[in-house]
Image 1: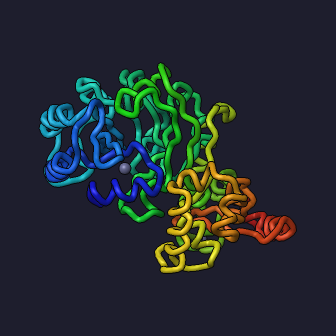
Image 2: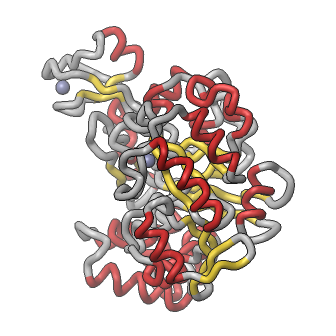
Image 3: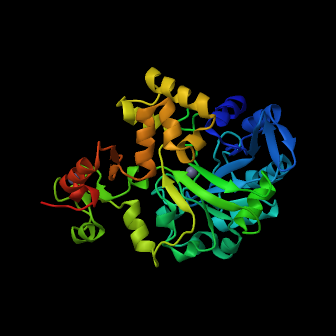
Length: 385
Ligand SMILES: [Zn+2]
Ligand SMILES: [Zn+2]
């Protein structure tokens, strides 16, 4: 996961602007400096643009995403943050011994953009710890620039909370590996006035540019989507879990509250976000499901990925833009799967209690209906004796 590899893989994925991640780490900063050329508001490597970014963890274990205008700002912010951190020299995501409010204050002093990371992750994010933005950010809540959804939520879920009304939602991938099913596994499509930091700033502040589409995993795939037993994974509705005092009726294990029900508790309105959220796994995963292999890195999957990628150039375009007819000319079977994902003609059995969700690609509409009927209680996350 180094800059030359990321830049090479990003081109195949069709990613134009990428966050470096971990930029407060001194070794990584040195690597980024060596491998990129600093331009006006971005860092360049081959035809790919980077902006300096990092996650930081606050005193309550809540994670925040910071986007820096340039490497000078990174170094200036580093000198402020290191006074509050014991591990900033060695960690990728440093722990800052300060509140979310103080961290926004420091970020703003250096003209950075900032927002909560993977906001609905149960353990290390704002809604795992707090009940509203203000509880974490205090008076600095006004200065938030965006909200990162994370793999466990989509914009439909997040827009049910009126606290988020003025925030742009980001579906970032937070990749820890350059494999095509990791890098850009979630991404944002936007028209930017400038493809750089200023362009992002104007986009977040509603001054110029427009988010066109959020693309990401189906939140139902997540390990903690439904409320479910930590030991036997039996699912429960929020009412049932409360009624049983969060004790599993099958095995007497404890029921872990799911993201879906956390949103239910926090929500105060219907979802109304104006930008579509497309539930799409990465192309290598779609090919994996289509051929029925256990991993997206098998030779067959990679070969078919390469054939599509070489013909069309960008995975993002293959997933959301290029017509099914055109895709069929290269790989009819995979094109058919992409069509089903685009139309949401698949069945998701949601995850919960630490168990991932399971997706089924039905052969036809009748099969889809049969599965929906057969697995109704699991799909709707209810307990039935
Ligand atoms: Zn994080
Ligand atoms: Zn159980």
